[in-house]
Amino acid sequence: MRTRPAAVAGSFYPNAAPLLRTEVRAHLRAAVGPISSLRPKALIVPHAGYVYSGPIAARAYAPLANRRDIRRVVLLGPAHRVPVHGLALPGVDAFETPLGVICVDPGAVRALQALPQVVVHAGAHAHEHSLEVQLPFLQETLGDFTLVPLVVGDASADEVAEALEAVWGGPETLIVVSSDLSHYLPYDLARRTDSHTAQAIAALDPALDHVQACGATPVNGLLMVARKRGLCASLLDLRNSGDTAGDRTRVVGYGAWAFSEPAPAGSDKVDRGQTTTDTHEAKRDVLISLARGAIARQLGIAMTRPSTAVFLREPGASFVTLRHRRELRGCIGSLEARRPLGEDVEHNARAAAFSDPRFEPLGAHELDQIRIEVSVLSAPQPIGARCLADLHGELRPHVDGVILRFAEKRATFLPKVWEALPNPRDFIAHLQRKAGLPVDFWHEELRALRYTVDSYVESES
Image (cartoon, rainbow, N blue to C red; front, side):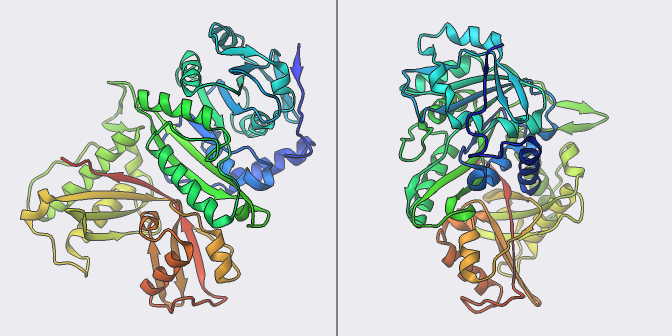
């Protein structure tokens, strides 16, 4: 059996199996994602040394731990060392890491070799790290699977998209695109640049360049297929090497995204009257209907509750935001999961409509004019900052919601606030004011926590 041996073990990650397994598991344990049962069809994951990008990569891989349906991984990454025209297969039967051997999928290889843009180029794979660093995470989370490895060189996004379509498969196939973001920019400029890249990926806009992402070509190909197939992109993490390791004069950006595809028509499962909803759109419809119904019933307007979805019975914390003509009309929420998510959403919807002290109670005549957003929060995690500058540096703009606590004072900003306050210092200063604390206040007993959010916004009629 022809095997491509590990080339960057001992440099990008540990070369001893026990040490490697321990490090990968530590990153996975530390990865805290939003409360969601979305099952990603595709991922974008960074590929630097684990000390730099491991925490961000783990945010994408952690949800795969319970995915026993995935049996094949299509893995694409950019060529860093050897120029190649098109997309390169390795011409081997297996890849090896300190955690074991992964067989290459022969059926997928045959399907790809029928495409003119796909070549066999062992040299392009021999020392390429962009694919290899993903393998230990996949081995730890998925166990047994076959691999379809492609190094992407001089190719178009259309050619990448065509190759992806050829091996897209069903739920047994996971697509992973390996890419870092901006390279060697000053810290603040890198944050702004990577934030713009994140917005383009969220919009499924396949127009990234190689300044924005070294893997722009495979990323753009994935975005083309994602748009065609109606996938939804979820940002899981966005940081850079200045946040994880190294100085902030010249940093490399890292991001992690999950792409979920809509369920086929008629595929919703019903079990003893409980509906299982797996797509973002399906969850949105249930949560918005639940919140709107709770407000309507409080106003004396008859409105039927939606079918009881399984995820609503799990403990959850939520915020419900009401807007009228895009202006805030009420926002109330919970920071900790102390009751079933469905009950929490109904409670907070009523509170946002009738108990937000900043606004008059909602009138029945306004019900059809408001637009509802339900935000589902992950469990808050402490931020280990030793001073205010540390706190500013630890924050992930457009990803983190933040809680500040000091004595009896407490306040939070949802991640959406980053749209108005993109600078971490401004973000924290306004949050301090909200908590009733002086701007630039610091005390050893000040506690900062972060959480992430799955947001579900009511579509405009």
